[in-house]
Image (cartoon, rainbow, N blue to C red; front, side, top):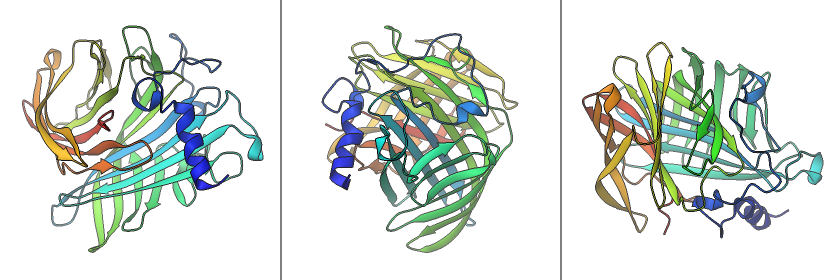
Length: 345
């Protein structure tokens, strides 16, 4: 399969001409669907779920160089299925896409890889953990100890990750509802990684340290048909508490949040408890994109302004979106990451 054909195969099963961002509101058809009460099993659920249509291993990190300069790092592996089964060699219906990026205050470097499953070019194994596409890799003896590598034409990174806290299950024990109609995913995170390593940028090699957050999610119809995209926040506050929150934009917005204490205790918040309101729009890649937000979770006294480190952190990938590090001021201070989809028109 040539690159152009593979690109079409990766996009079309997500229904690029169908409902929602990247067609993620398309009906699940014969694919498996998340069910409430399902008990996640580790380390098995660190691996792939080929009977579901879409899945990702999504890592973001906020970093600091030796002179205090802030940076952001992204490493993502997406799995998309043409049919709800696995297979060997070219018979497999499993397709893979990788995104990597480094964001600085002045620049945003990004790259994309496309691969077919079943031939060794890309995949994930749960134990010992290994996720890869071509020569990009996230691997280690388990999910607590990982080495992360990726490169593009003008950047590379090689960093080590060490978990300092527990896994966090979102929603109802990892069953995360996405709409009033009941669309859902299985969703958990490891938000407690310490990171150390090296960024390689046009200006040279830069030693960095920081914190990383890994999201794991799989579903077959994670959006309702009217939902056109989402605004997702992972926020780490001074003092150690953390918060995940998202807004799914549709005829009526749907929200969800998880409050995570410094010792890893998680509290889920239902639709309406969390809010994110754009404060400032920035012209990015020919679009108007909100790059400053007011984010609130009144039950935890959160009322903060979230500001992009670099407003131009646009991912000009096969399915375009905005992804970059942010700073937090207001009732709480800290750093985090923001992802915004559905702003591609």
